[in-house]
Image (cartoon, rainbow, N blue to C red):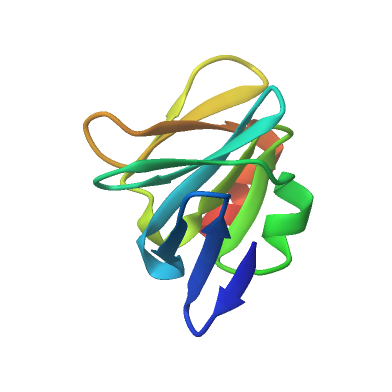
Length: 107
């Protein structure tokens, strides 16, 4: 994984994928893999959230232990319970945020 201009380069033995940082809605950690979600695709990467976060702008916030969200792309935040909220980026794209992180996002 590298940064090239305003893109992140993800590579494996078969291909190199360029993802424009501005297109990223959120990143999600599931097991040993990280999934990078954009409006039109989801790309699987074998990299930690901590490592990829260093390549992103301050618009990207660690909202939960399993998520980094792009605060510029949020459409809505829905309160789920006393400690957690759901961040909506469109009809199908959702991430989690700890309730105490909401003020960090909206300021």
